[in-house]
Length: 303
Length: 255
Ligand SMILES: Nc1ncnc2c1ncn2[C@@H]1O[C@H](COP(=O)(O)OP(=O)(O)OP(=O)(O)O)[C@@H](O)[C@H]1O
Ligand SMILES: [Mg+2]
Image: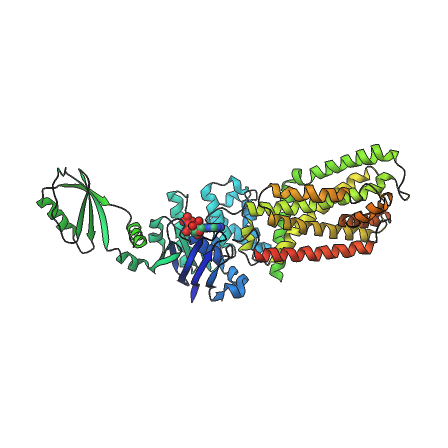
């Protein structure tokens, strides 16, 4: 069964702007799913429709088989959402924010208090339970929204850039927390701009651009599609030397001592080094031009 | 159903915590203002005036002043709380939950009623310093207080739904509610007005609320109590339905 199934989802905002142009997406139960895309691609709009904050213009959304047009309240119970932007009252106390959210899902107060203690402890916020939310740091506010999104034990957790503005150590902590949730059976959908994050966490990755899905496959297959890789070589001064052609390889001088080398997957590094040696160019150091996923991303988006 | 009650309780609890968290803004100012009314109009000026239908001027205006505070505070509470929930976007906490619209409306309205009736109660206590009010019918006193508070709480939510900026929160109270209350027979009996203005006054719904409430205390009224009650029931149903309609359409809250 699919945790989420979206067919031909479209959204035209009141301004007339078409943010989604027919999105199709299927997220199997138990998956850790990454939705990637540049700014303004339509990630938050898609999540908004799934959580009822945005009304769709057309298309169909099902949560564990429940059509949101048929029974949205039942679908909502299955979803927990951690939004991109803070949306709690900064005057309310941390624990109140979490327990009242439980109340909105019909969870009795005793259970709400017990659940809130568990999640606030797990997320390192228990000491802050009586502080008004405005006294939390940015990273704590994110974690507060995670606790709030989990308080009713949803089957599907949707996080819209949960680690934006979170430091490296805390981010790793969050990753472990999310991986643990996923291993216990929760389906997780995550949007992110940190491509390393998607690589680390997700099994399946979809790429959205300008309101449409341009790629949707498991991470390995996706990475295999990355048929080109670019390296930056620091070399001895080129002094106007022409580099003869080499199959499967592209040399682009950037400046006197920097060379960008794009190679196909099949081409071996040895052959490249040999080739450069034969024109008396010495490679002093080298690095990946960018994250591999990022490169793939650019490749797909620019196609 | 049980879940809806829990959710209603959660919203009401949140609203009540808010009222008491900012009590310096919510509870104190109305009590001070109304005390001034009692001192100036009741004591200083009222002592120079003759009785109205057998009651001192102070006793005559006290129920109206209490009602005035219930009206303003019920309305102000829901409009500012709902607008603030939109502004800080924490209204989304409710929207993503399965809580039905009628529960959201009753939840916010209950907050308005708690504030309106708490202030009304405090103002009643203050009035005891100046005058011993009789209670002609506790039933009508309480009924008019509850229904009026409910109606203005609902009206405040509608204002909150449409408000886009902070100014929008105070426009209706300043330009509609306050004038209608002053002209609603708090300070005078309609029988003191020339015939034409009596007729005009009867088009002001607040006249019926104040008179009904005063009837509960003093047993006197310028208008029929039953017309007043029917009107309150009508406004309750109409405003509640309007709220349901606006929330369903997502006015101001869904894009
Ligand atoms: N309320 C709105 N009215 C009009 N246009 C909107 C509205 N909300 C979003 N948009 C537009 O819809 C497009 C998609 O926005 P969305 O927030 O879904 O992007 P996103 O993928 O989440 O981007 P980011 O990574 O920056 O968060 C953008 O062009 C945005 O300007
Ligand atoms: Mg976004």
